[in-house]
Structure formats: C-alpha cells, structure tokens
Image (cartoon, rainbow, N blue to C red; front, top):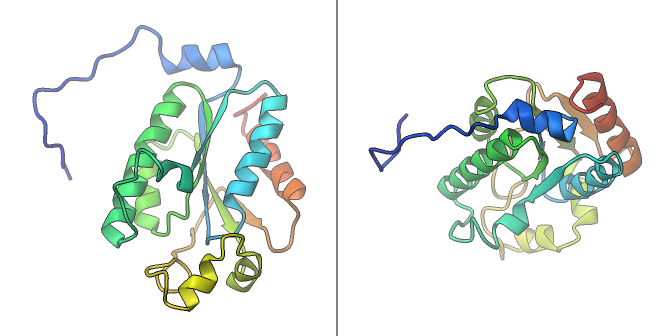
Length: 203
C-alpha cells in the first residue's frame, strides 16, 4: 500500500553503488535482526557480536530499541500502531545501512511477524537480511529482568508490555534460532559468526 504523502520526489542514484562499498569493506552489507522477548538477550548478543566483528575489521553498527526511542522514534509509544511505525522506520534505516555495506545489528522486540516481514522485504530476499530468534522462556526473562520491567508489568504499572499484557509472535522460519536460556553468550555468538562465514557474508 502506497502511504507516501509527498509527490514529485525522485530517487537520485549515486555513482558509487553497494557492490563498490562492499568491495571496500571486504564483507557484505548485512542486517542481523534480533527479535525476542524483553530481557531475552538481544542487546547483549548484538554488543558481543559487534566486538567479534570489529576484531575482524568489519564495519558495524547497532540499532538498539531503547537507544532509537531516545531520538528517531521518541515520538512513538507502545500501542500496536506505534509499534508498527517503530519497526517500519527501523527497517528503512537498516536497509540504508545495508546499502552502505555495513553489518548492522537490529535489537528490537519487534513482536509482530508482519512488521518483521516488511523489514525483510526491503532486502528483496538477497540473503542479507538474517532473522535471529533470541528464544528464552519468559520465566527466565523475568528472573533476569535487569530493568525491573516485568515486575512493573505484573503490577499493572506498565501497560502493553510484550510477554505479559501484549502479544509476541515468534518467528516461524528464522535463519538463526538461539536458545539463550540454555547457551552462553559466547556460544551464541559463535553460532552467529559461523552462519555469517558459511553464507559468505563475511570472509
């Protein structure tokens, strides 16, 4: 559906294209889309993976849900409509970073399959959108609860909290499925690095 409100705007093509940037970077432009319940380990894994990729001299950037809500998406709340727009915007940013040849790690709950599918579709199924299901039982997430959010949600202080009072739709066919309740951060990062290498996204 075309929601564009402005007309008479045209795409200006650069002389330097994505393949040129990837050649310079010596790796593909990739989005690793970490999705999962609050406190499942999305941000922790993104940070740990970025450190490993940096050691390999990869160009990286993390798009973290909390950080983005301080700036780009500070006008959005947590209603279903605002969650949709939150993910739509991030999908577009991730697509731009891919075009720049950057490995970007998106750490968002992104609870709805349709929103994640919309973000994936921007990649035109070229293999550079990697959905990472950070799978952790809600009871373990609650035990971790570093921000005390689950407790507030159970008390009714936080409304529309994913996993308590708002739904989460787990991925059906993610490229990578990480059981963070069973495996360590290092073990999960190892799986991520292996996937990137085996699929020739990094050298």
